[in-house]
Length: 115
Image (cartoon, rainbow, N blue to C red; front, side, top):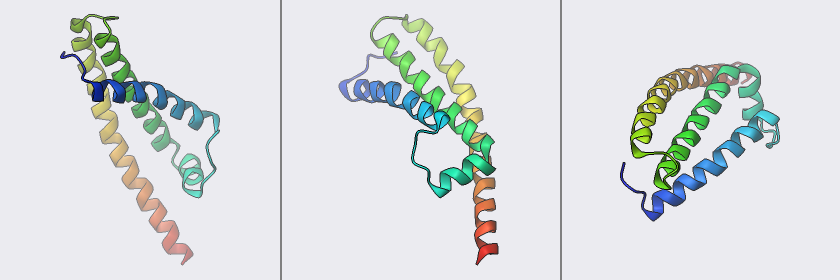
């Protein structure tokens, strides 16, 4: 693993700090109540749960990169952790695309029936 340059260091710190806060805000219901958010949490809970898992894996990915950069874990451990995090991320991304397509179909069907 190569050392992080300034841009990637700042980006990983931002992701490692903000993404867990985003998950916490969604789970605790602290965010603004928008019609789309209410619709997704009410009718497509699996889509939102998978979204939170993807955001969590993204934050964990950044934390591993930061830990390797600052020497908290060895680069060998970081190289092993990347596929361990990347494979579930890929699977969840495919599931997320499928669930997003279903949510969009449902949303368009509801809008058509109301018009």
